[in-house]
Image 1: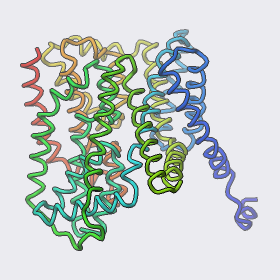
Image 2: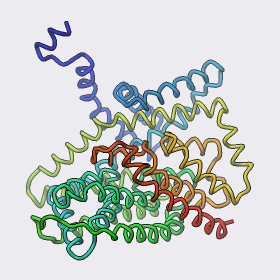
Image 3: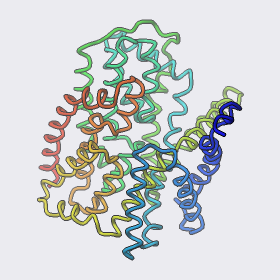
Image 4: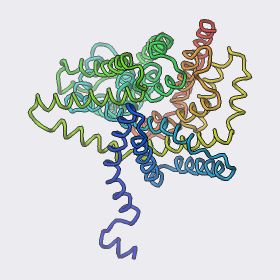
Length: 463
């Protein structure tokens, strides 16, 4: 049968099943996002049932096509869940109460995946390239420019910003592409410390209860000094741009630079005017509204439906390819809630409670960094920590938040399990160990020392 199928060109059963299920992901994802938006404004139980139902269905459809890591996570989650049932500790009400937190993270990720829609347009990609060439012609090195672009584009595109930088480097500076991409990753590593468009940052803000303004107050000094020093070190080897840009630099470059600022400021403004709305909902609704508005304006100015068609295509692709997001955060939710019901996280909480207050921040940074290096994704990791040791109950939520973010930053380019290292590995063709720990251990070591000093200063100020 298999030989006959191969001769006729028919796809195997597994591929046909995946194609059929992927065709369902876009409409189901649209219902999931619509239910999430509605649930943000109402406690109407049927709306939450639709949100959890579609989320659970998409989770079940995601696991078979996810990575080996996600399948191992699925096994751990099912074992923990089974243990709650067998021991009589299962509490359906707790699942219904807490699982939406994890599905909300998925919803934000799906919305943020289209946040870069405007600057992914061809003419803006050309302006990014023109900006890079102009900066290098005026004395900035290729590595320095890539680091700055990695930070700026990362605020909106997350690790997707590396793809745009790689496209530009392949043409403008092919001889320095690997090194420049590595410096783009180092510049990007400072992004989660401040932007409210990063899911890591959002989760930390939500769990610690720190205000966005409070987070900026404690994080910006480290970001400004740290990023400046990073770019100055990158400037030691300038590199050369091989050719002039096809497109002259114009106001489109300003739009590229200002767009991340616009999104961050808009989210902060809406959050200030609607304090009762959760931060995840504020980000999702604000970003979606701005992206749709830009698409409508572009369609009106061009008198063409192509901008709307491109947005529709990007949104559909994001929903169809969302296996990893649903698998990681959906399964993490099941695992964490199950462990909570089994009271299996008490030893972790007891350890933190036993520490003097001045050592809690360093301990949070250390556990965050080492846990991520060991292979536990940083967001499920801090959700586990929060379950055992509620982060909003401390005397200095801004200090706790900064400790977690800095611990994550130190590990981000050192662990082969981060999205940044995975993307850089894919673009460079190098093994994650090579482009990650082997290439970045000196940077991570200096960052760890700077983190220790900065956390010590904050501890003196807050405690």
